[in-house]
Amino acid sequence: MQKNKKKTEGRKYITTNKKAFHDYTILERFEAGISLTGTEVKSCMENGANLKDSYACIRSGQLTLVGAHIAPYSQGNIENHDPDQPRILLMHKREITRLKKSVEAKGFTLIALSMYFSPSHKIKVELALCRGKNVRDKREDMKKAIDVMETKRMMSGKGKL
Image (cartoon, rainbow, N blue to C red; front, side, top):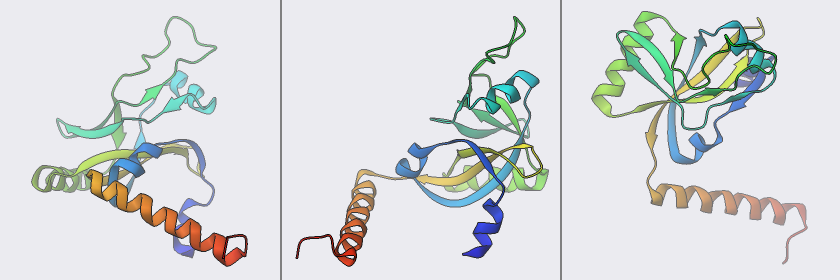
């Protein structure tokens, strides 16, 4: 438990993809750097990013983030960035080839979970190797969450007996 706490310590989250936790079963997580321009970084500082429906794919040996929306910088000029352009993610080549094999062979998907500032003040993207949930899995997860809430309520003494 403390191991995960140390990893997340010092992160300042810009945005998270809450829909990904509902629609996908997360199997493995990865951290990748992202290549951004100056106005994109400034827009991220203003919390102008959105990862809803964003995913990563491998194109010509490079990991690319597709579907991420970074709003135009409010103080920018005519040379402001395109908000929906694909962005290059930075990972080691051996990690990219391993991800490519698992995505092609097993039918997994690379989904962007969150974007944050690392303790060294660099913007990072947390990716996850995911498998899509079907309707039955979503219903089971909702039932488990309801059961957990009911047991907590009963343990606190506020529930009906």
